[in-house]
Length: 86
Image (tube, rainbow, N blue to C red):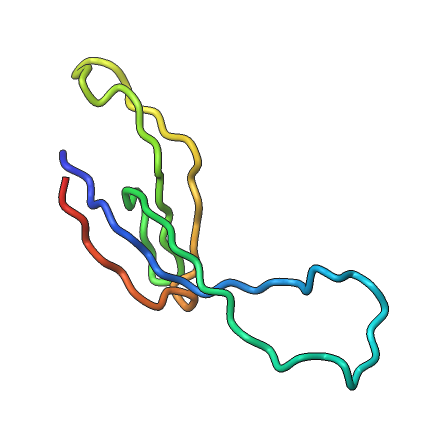
């Protein structure tokens, strides 16, 4: 069965990299951190999407496929999904 390959644009939280005591007045206005991820959608619920960027054994019909680099993205963080052809 052919899996669905997608580019997913999503927003993530982040921490200022300074990691030092900062005066409250010096804090900059918050911005979103936009991320891009590409992978085959393996599981999807109303709350989450799990993608796998690397899948093995695609040319061996009798071998069980394996994946690595799996990531689950909350649906509320997804800004855009673009279906890719392969």
